Length: 157
Picture 1 (tube, rainbow, N blue to C red):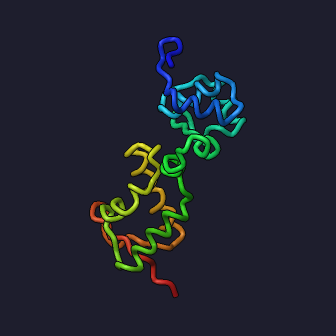
Picture 2 (picture 1 turned 60 degrees about the vertical axis):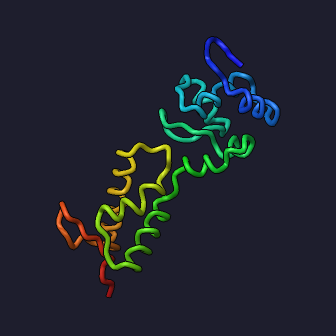
Picture 3 (picture 1 turned 90 degrees about the horizontal axis):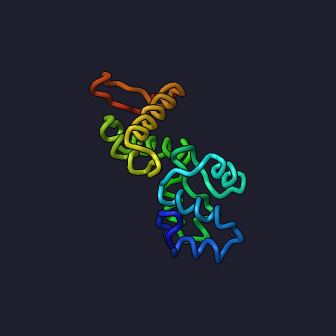
């Protein structure tokens, strides 16, 4: 289907129209969100109020409700961020098992687990923030240098 020069995924739109009572404007906006294309601010507000999209502009993605209707559940989980405790548990389990980790090893462990909605720079920043948070809570410590980090669990007494 083509509307005003834009190509709309017919299968996606048909499924949304059949399984929901959404107006055509919302179906078209959701199609654009699914394709990672920009949508107007008023459409963002309307879809967010209806619980149909999540994320921050410009990194919007369809909500679990829409993913369930359109059978995109796996994509939804990949784009939805997990909470920091999930990533912290992965890291502390790794350090318990192997004793220490360099930043490269931590990146290898965590980067592919982070949301697909994040850019590589955002993923790197997220890992840095997680390391800082755990260090401030005295869960882990860097026994290496700034350029050659060596992260370990702190010795708890």
